[in-house]
Image (cartoon, rainbow, N blue to C red; front, side, top):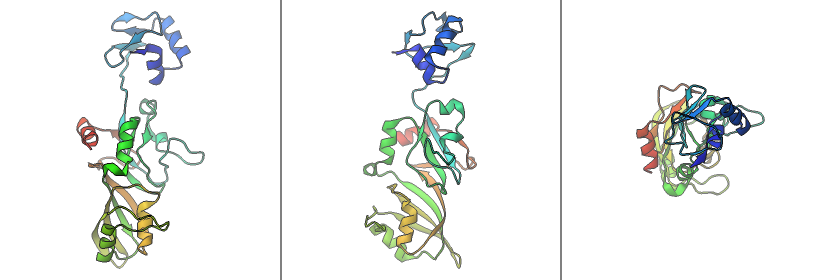
Length: 238
């Protein structure tokens, strides 16, 4: 059970003081009954709450898939740059979701956002072996030696040895290679640093899959949507 004013405040209907004023004006009903006390105890998942004629849709958690654009920071706040949270509609932002892991500022693609801390922890913890799949352009030719090095675990510039990764060469030309890389970690600039250790440079990077979910191709960069029940079950089944 929770207080009505707390529930409405968390959903962005105003401060507790403002919600108390709405109640005094007779603008709030619960299960068809006019509310007289903003501190009313109720089960928000079962109660039918109406505020000023508008039905309140309550959810404890929210789960979003975003196609992160270039130049936007994977954070909830930044003094200088636009963040992924800044791209959210107020109806979603009020739940205060946070990005699951990080994508570099210049990396695009699949980013999950949620306010479910337990699921977030499971998705970013290496011990759960959650696949993260990236598509990338490399400035030089990627060969079988690089594939083998990724399988053995690339050693980064700071001496850290990465967990084994699966590197697939998709296309090669004089300009370099296009590849797909599957890893289960999320170290700082990991994909870029892996290729730097191999003597090559990533010129374009896009995450195309996370935890068994593929990026929705209908989402333009900067767009997002809520996960379907089926997609959520895939993540929770990890």
